[in-house]
Image (cartoon, rainbow, N blue to C red; front, side, top):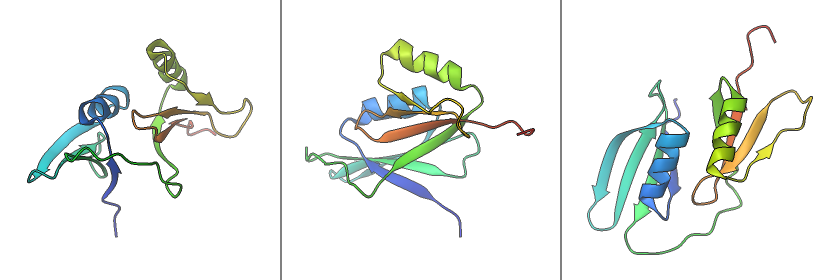
Length: 125
């Protein structure tokens, strides 16, 4: 069994696509309208083995963030470069405690979902 995708309902499809493709570097691989009801946009990383499905419902309904969902996590090679990008954009972020086992930050996507950005560990660690 292989993980296929995670679906997130979004309020503003363009803002969410810009966040996930711009800041997180994902690429759009498929866009599927479901009649007049919704638009699904599938995004993936360089490997293309896993997808995030952004679902935008056209009926104008709003959503509350659920308490069951935690966050999405992404690896990067240079966390400080990401921190500089986040600060330049004026986004709120929370950083891991110094001296901890992992180095990471949390940011929020346009709908308030938590996104964890983890610095990849070197092979020597």
